[in-house]
Length: 158
Image (cartoon, rainbow, N blue to C red; front, top):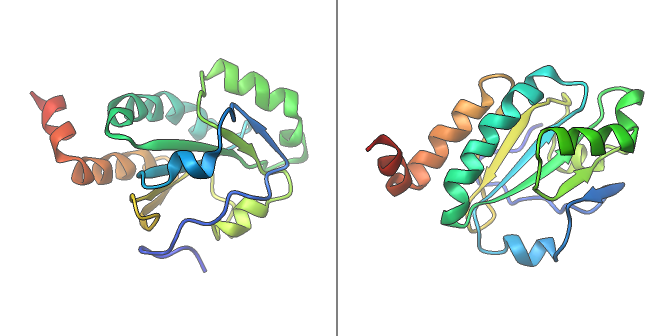
């Protein structure tokens, strides 16, 4: 059963590796709206959406929204850390990026289908506001962020 609106954000323990982790993540996201997004190097839609996600990050980061990336392999070849590192550089992913080679985060976030891309938006209390997957997931994430931060949505329209 997938996560439901209002569920608390699961722990990020269980990642096999991390990239771009320079701080205590739990402390960094405490009291902040947080987007956790799952992607894979073999996922074309993920790669198409990463620039759109960066635009959202650039827009909402000033509001304190934090972004956490989770690379979830779909195939054995996706577990190659050098491929993940290359993709992170190629797509300018600056967010802390967990590598979920054992699918422990997939289980914690109850992503039974193994969806990528999938976006989870948690409010400042750590409660799930929206979960959106697939090619239209980024649009759903964007509209939810606009509702949470209407002042930013107004700025971008003007």
